[in-house]
Length: 337
Image (cartoon, rainbow, N blue to C red):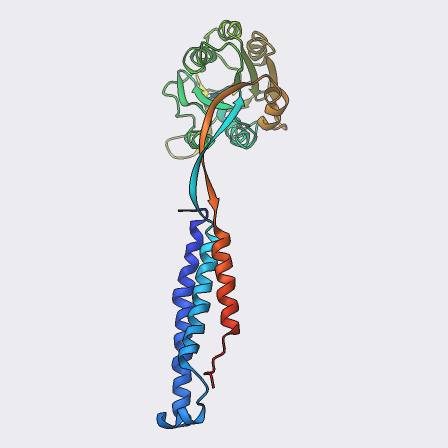
C-alpha cells in the first residue's frame, strides 16, 4: 500500500494527544463529580440505568471513526498494475550563455537571471519533449543531458551561475558544435531544436559555420538575444571589499551590447531558424516561444514511459468512518431494562 498524502498522518497526533486525553479527562471528571454527590455504594442505586462500558464503547467508536477519516485523507492505494504511456515530442537543447556579460542589468533582474526564470517557466509548458541544458562561456559544459525528467532539469538550472564554466569569454560556435556532436542523436535528422540564449558576444569561435553545419543535420536554431543593441549596459561585479562596482578593462568600464548581427547569422543558417530579441523593457517568455515555434512542429515517438497504476481505496476508510460515527450516535448509554 502507498499513500498519496502522507502528511495527513500528522492528524493522528491530534487524536492521540487531544481527543483521547479529552475523553479520559471527561470520564475522570465525571467520576469525581459523582463522588462529591454521593458515596460509591449509593451511586448504582441513584442512577442504575447508566452504563460506563457503553460510554467507553461509544468513545472508542468515535476515536476509531476519526482515525479512519485521517487514513482516508492520506489517499491509500494498493494493487499496483504496470501501465505504459507513449510520449511524443522533440529534442530541445538550451544553450545558455553564462559569461560575465550576462550579469548586465539592462534586463531585470539581469540577463542571466531573466533567462533562468524563463527556462524554469518553460518546464510547465513542455508536453513530453526531451530537454537538455548546456552552459557556455570560454568553454562549454553539459549541465543536463536530454531527459523528460523536468524535476531534474530544474535542479540543474538552480545551480547555474557565471561560475558554471571555468574559463571566461564567449564561444558560441563551440557550444553549438558540442550540442550537435554530443547531445543529439546523429541517427535522427529531424525533431531537433537548439534554443540559444546569449547576448551575442563571441570571441572568434565561428558560430555561423557551426550553425550552418548543424542546419545540414536538420537542427533548427532559435537564437534569443538578450540586451540593448545600441547603448549596451555595464557589467556589475563585487570588489574585494564587498562593494558593488563595474567591470573595467584598461581602466575603462566595459559596456556590453547585444550582438544581434551574429545571432541573426546563426539563426538563419539553420532550416526555419528564428531570431528573437529581448531588449530592455521587454520580457522573455519561453513558454510562448515554445507554443508558437516548437509545439506545432513535427514530433516523433519517444520511448514509452512505464508507470504504476494503483486502485484508490480511500472510499473504504471513509465508509467505515461513517458507519462508526452513525453507530456511536445510535447506541444508547443506558443499560437494557
